[in-house]
Image (cartoon, rainbow, N blue to C red; front, top):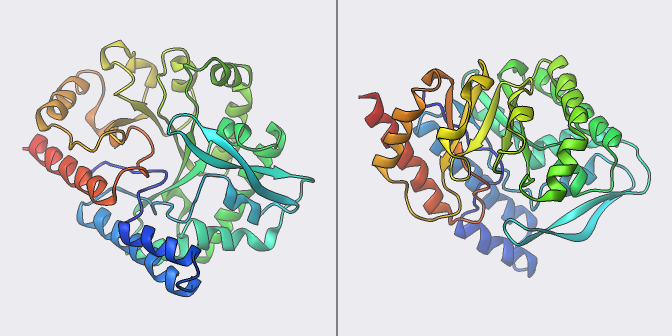
Length: 327
């Protein structure tokens, strides 16, 4: 198996993008469009299978942004107001509620329609590890009008319902990795202050998820210089580091203890394929700091703005490099 995981929003194919536009213009039906979503998902799962990934993910192809699907499980909620996501200069819709109540009938719809878990679990032939991406604590706060207590309730209730859902598939939740993706840049003063002032709330949330016997990856794309001690001390299975924004030589990997390192070395901000020699040099350096068995390769950020074929080729290239290193 190749230790690699690709969380968050994977690029849609050109064909799916075209068919989505056709649907918006009433040229095709929703049922016809669904076939193209299924094809993108099937192609992505087959790619992961062919490349022998140790962690599967579904690409989140139906997520137009991170929070809009949560209107399904929250009564009296909507997602209309556009908020700019500075990092990619794109706009996400803000999740807003007028009163806080769950719509329990819709959790299964959320898992099937947006997380594609029914498709994924039927696809898998064995107990392969599965990564499920959720917006992390502060991302939820920044792009909604929910308070911290409500956010914790939403994420924990979702995870409890997920456990029941998995039981129906007789799938062991120990093979499910909850990947909390934090879309904050800690170099921005507002994001940094939000994190530092409410860090204990994040710790409590992670503790609650651990009690439900789910493993956790904490994923962030930011420069970690100001917050690295806080993040490395989180009680999670693995933590990501974007090595295009963080200098390998300046990180004290001892503070990771026995946690896994999700090494963000696959660039999502460039269409250039990663250079073999530079990646091999990274492997040689990182092996001086930690047990290579605790290394998981990943993306540096969200890949959804890259062309699909470019991102596919980046993954194939990384696997070729891994095979060179193994020799």
